[in-house]
Image 1 (cartoon, rainbow, N blue to C red):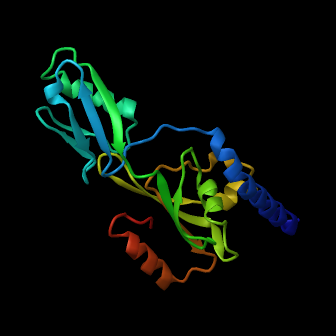
Image 2 (cartoon, one colour):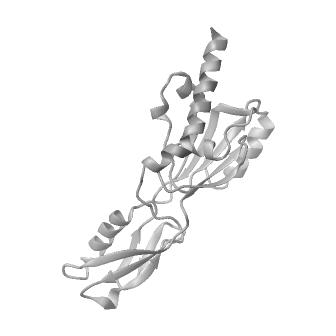
Image 3 (cartoon, rainbow, N blue to C red):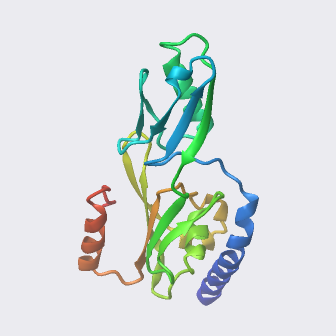
Length: 213
């Protein structure tokens, strides 16, 4: 019975990985602003305030003549609402148009025990399993129950999360597999992960993230 469960889990993962790239186009998601993105602000009635703004390393944009506003992780619509609120402190009924001038293509990094580790670009909503499938899938040594999801949150906070996709596959709960955001990092650990290797890898991320205990 145990072998049957393991075989079924592996089969489901294989089917999921094969279909992942084909289904991504059906799940469009709005672009979210990232570091170094440049947005052109065009004020219709007060062109003297029109300008290009950049999402800085702190996740905020400096708007000359108006102040600063958070932008990291926001859609253009959400960013516009924040800019209108900021503009209303100086302008009467501002009429604002946004244009995304330059941006980094949405991507995540998939590292560790996958067949083609590195940068995975995407234009649609993807999950942890989607990203791993696009990175060539798990190696035989990959631990499906020990995947680290590392994320920068808007406002400068950081999150580290342990994802057990093996359990979700086994219990047929693929809808609970976490969705990813641009800039996320996935690290698939080895099935047999020595304590020294664990410290070394988490130490590398520790410069940016607070690792899970």
